[in-house]
Length: 293
Length: 255
Image (tube, rainbow over the protein chains, first blue to last red):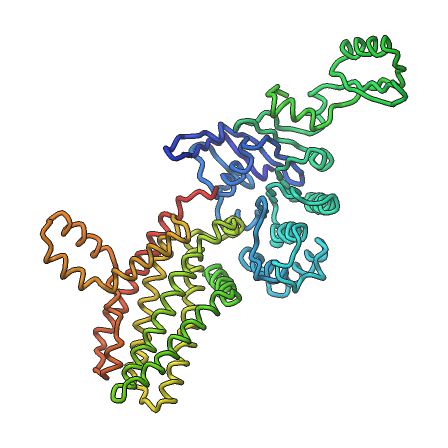
């Protein structure tokens, strides 16, 4: 069962003093399955946030189709099953953490007051903000705001969670906490779809990947498959001038040539190993240089 | 309906917890207090002067709430992007606008209730008889603030906060001078200017229709027909402006 299906999405904006049509999405297609974590990658301006906004009805697309939960269009019932955390969220700073979650919970749910209170207590515990529940959001740190924002997206137990740059600007502790929460939400059956510029975190977290370049999907599929397709790299570890060094080559021929040069320079080769490319290398190759995966 | 109520309550809480509201309240109370001092200047017309200035204080306070707080009602949500987390919930854009307006109307009722209590306290202190016309005059100010809120909400859909304030102040001034402006337009020479000005005047609500302060000051009788007509006039303007705002808002992209 597809949680979200995006077909042939086109979107353009009129920008500038003398308005000019600028195409942002150029036929975007992808599908999300339940219980999966999908990373949405692309360079700045590739169209990630615009895609999310079109999916969520915050921006209107000119052409294409977006359907949820086996073919339903975006309606009030569907919205009740979606959680969203925007990039760099500024929340209602005059509310306390608990009031904030209650406000969003009341908007989405047909829960009893008692059930909602239970859910809020559980969520605050899950994101580690129980102590700060009666503090106003203006007194929250950036990491705390991100966590309460994440809790806001989950308060109504959504089946699809869309997160725009959920870990940007967070310290390693905060990033790890959010990553754990994402894993937990997916393990409960929801599909998590998030955009990020942090390749290391995405590589560790996602099973699936969608890479966008100039408003077009360059890759959609499993992370492992993508990294395999992008080929291998050969790492040469050598000892030169009393220092241990390493370098990477894309193929065996160039690695052999490099080894000959190094040996000619008097370096000692300590180890030669075959590595799969990191997501960062593969991403640069696909999204920035444009080689198809 | 439930989501309108929840958004209204949140808007009410937002404004009540904002220091700006207390600044406006203090300013309006000082204006009302000033009416007492000004009343002392006259021996015979003390009560009338106090009543007139006191009501002006309430009117200015109510107009500031509608224009200045109303101007940030939607624009702040858009600038801070909080609107994005709201509109992805089962909340339509029209429900969002209605919830925000209703929240500000609650605030307006609270503010006017406080200011009216202050004025009535002053009347009692001065031994002035409180007649029903006083409440009618207050109701007129409320209707005016409702129309101003509609105007502010309409402009805030596509303009920045500063521009909204400028436009709404313009409507406030033209709306009170509409009869004088009409008189001058009729005396004018250029047909083109006459037509353009007439169009602007027709597209602007006549706020003098809600000015019943003189009824209170001179203890004139109140006609129920006048009350009903003015109430309908205010409601039609408010509904028209909110519906127009909703129509434009439905097509807006949040980038």
